Image 1 (spheres, rainbow, N blue to C red):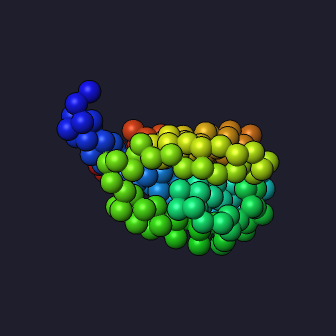
Image 2: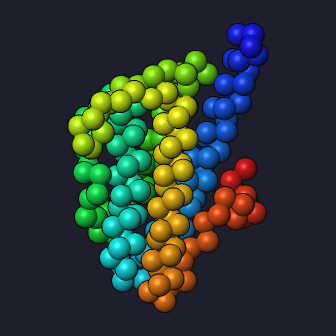
Length: 166
């Protein structure tokens, strides 16, 4: 692949990741609204949502080579989740805005929560963050259904239909 062609593809990837993180922000907001409306009646759902937010912060800190500030599985209240859900999209947008096409191929070294050392490409980390959140939002939906609560509808296409994800 010619270098210029690869550069054009990566520019498109930057826009794609910005779109995915817009979706992620919307979907997290939908879940948070349901958790807030139900007063945290589902402790497991709240725990999973706290994990989503903590993992998003953790991966951003890894990308920025900064120390971890939250445990991977924190015990957050609905109010603490609201604060995280308000701050994280701003931090991610700032990070993505500064990202260049060549940064997507850059490798980041980090240690996981077990202390095991790895290195991953930025592009793969960004993909993981969005997919990890969607996975756990699915668990939250199943947990809420089991508790007799109608979960948030967070499918990607729903965000597109509503015009939130463009």
